[in-house]
Length: 377
Length: 234
Image 1 (tube, chains in turn blue, brown):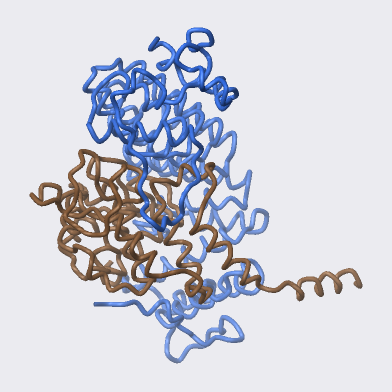
Image 2 (cartoon, chains in turn orange, green):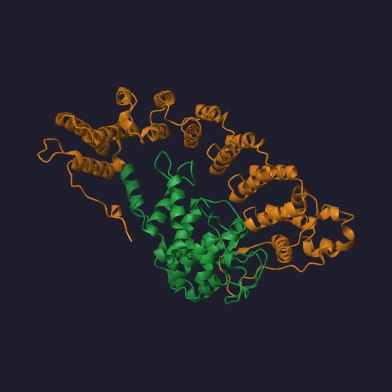
């Protein structure tokens, strides 16, 4: 008898179609031996007669009320009843699967299911199969990934994770939950070995996949780090190669800058020249912005050196301001206010008082937007 | 040329359909169809969005503020007589657990009833939008509930039973402390450390250390520092 109620959620799908026939419901008691595929409300199941269902109570004036079907309410009325008594039983465990199928975002159901998994010493390998199927259907839900993480932690077994996540990423290469879970697994269980290779495969498929670029940074910074000059050179080469393939790829430029900005872009010998080489054939707002950042860094570090010629400094400033002007007026006009602002800031910081440098733009008022004036308490 | 001009004319004729937007938010506040079931546990955030929308449209007069305030207060998890549930206080997202409707204390003890940090945040916001003075909020209980959610690394769980932990909930926590004007609800320094650690190589913020930067998390990071008055010090 209980076999009917505890069948998998798959067969419940089938049952739904003939569930709401009034005549059928009248004959319930005798009939489920005759037609075991017919859906039966929990309130009509003998095995649940001991439990008083608990309805939702939104009071006299509910707000944002969701209009649940009879079937939905029935399942959750019994879920609430189980919760109230904190029942730890197989029937409770089975019901959580139904509740999840109706609303996989209900974090209380998932929590209760975890309580039952432990209380009933359920097979966690089975649970891995279950959660794998659910994530496959609903890969952008927070609760399902958290649940998987908990099960992996209990099992202390990450062996399926990288392959599983790769599979999810093959459906959506930027799924934030998948990447987050991947980072957690790799860090927790020290699974760094093949990750760079994995990243490169993804970047081969789509060089604009910013998540993969982020992962590249993650892997290297947590393993070899970026201080070894051989590694840095390898990465610069890699970036420039990708930039040649797709010049307007912001991710590659962000990575290049991000990798080097802490020690100063100008500290990398020859880099400025290598980027200048690309200026005519592979130009983009990002390339120009990178040049600006290089010049700014040159000015910053020459401030700290004593033997830098004034002329040299002015030359760098002029080049930087020319870039600002080019970006503001032609190459990145949507951000013209930003480029004007940067140009003005640079000028006021590094320009000399009796300057002979050109102005950056026609309206060179160094306006400081109100948003920059921050609150201090 | 003529085609372009008539296209421009079409654009000029598009008005901002204020009344329709108002009706949309009104309907949202009433009933949603079953396919919105996944929003059940976060219904209070939906109220917040709808009320904010009506507020921006200067249309809060279309709803009954008092009734709505009552309903929001029914979601408050208040201390039980024996105070044993203090670390679980705050606001629920909805009535989904099955606690009987009540806008007064003392709280009912239930093995699975607890607040959710994002619901406490949007609950307080919604009350303020509706003109409530928060006098019926048990501030000490909310703050106790909040403290129970912070981890060693400075981030927050959403619920005391455990959940994912990240920068979103730090923002919720900071907003709660700000609205209650009491920062004892969180360890500010640890939260700042977590935020700092979430700064990506591309100068945006990820949900946590090492993760890809994202507009939403960048907002959470900057807004939190602003609310704390610590933006300058970075």
